Image 1 (cartoon, rainbow, N blue to C red):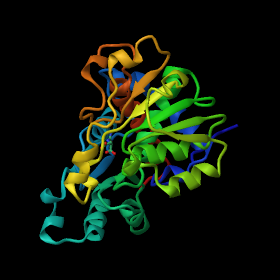
Image 2 (cartoon, helix red, strand yellow; image 1 turned 90 degrees about the vertical axis):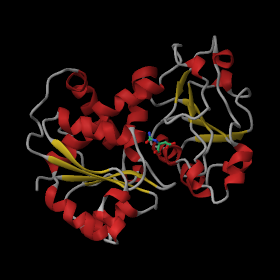
Image 3 (cartoon, protein in one colour; image 1 turned 60 degrees about the vertical axis):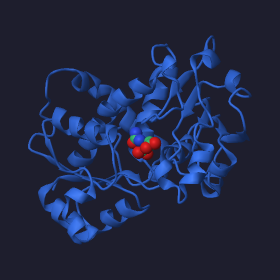
Image 4 (cartoon, rainbow, N blue to C red; image 1 turned 180 degrees about the horizontal axis):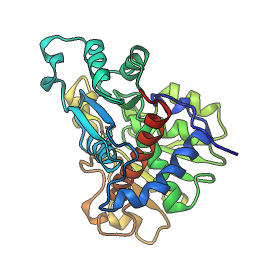
Length: 311
Ligand code: NCD
């Protein structure tokens, strides 16, 4: 059977079926050698990726740039709206239309939910959501799933704890939605009461076979999980900084807590203080591997979308 990837844009992981996810993960593993080698492939020679980052980013932007360059193309763009003409009052729509003229695909990060979708409706090139406010971060989810599959062997039968800011953390929203496509998954939700998983995400999970449970301490579930997926408290999304200060540092993972356990620790990064640095040099640390996996996974995404949708 010849498999095809049907999506033109990557806006929400909710648009994916299981086979779409598997398609990207398979492509990514085929590209691992190129991602790690010093060779540059010519698969996307001459192609330009437009990177519109209205919100800060390190790994996401740099791994997209590395991915397009490793495939023989190049990236253009800005890292914050202050360095684009949006700061002079240009509309996002005009900026996107102009970027479309220069690029074969657009990658967008914005503090408002729905901006990538809005842009995908007004341009013809593929659009990739690299994080929209507290909404979705589908390409992070693809590299999270890739990491889980590589480290644990399969995504079915996973037992995972999502820890930290489940309210504003877009990576845990997308990941929960994606896990709904797999079999026999159990999700433990560990967060301060103020930062619980939003009702709409729980509503989505309830439509799947995933079972979930809210718990108030990591100790209660630590012997029952394959993955501790830790996230930072999203300071920038609090209206009142005092509310942030009250819950900062609520859950911290250290080496002593996990020693002898059969699990891995993941984190989309950046880390603030949720994972003690004493975990960094242990076998449990898969957060740096996860960041490295961003390159083959984003190469697979770019190759697929740009080749399927030539300008
Ligand atoms: C995440 C994000 O931007 O949502 N970072 C990332 O892309 N790896 C997580 C975060 O900012 O906490």
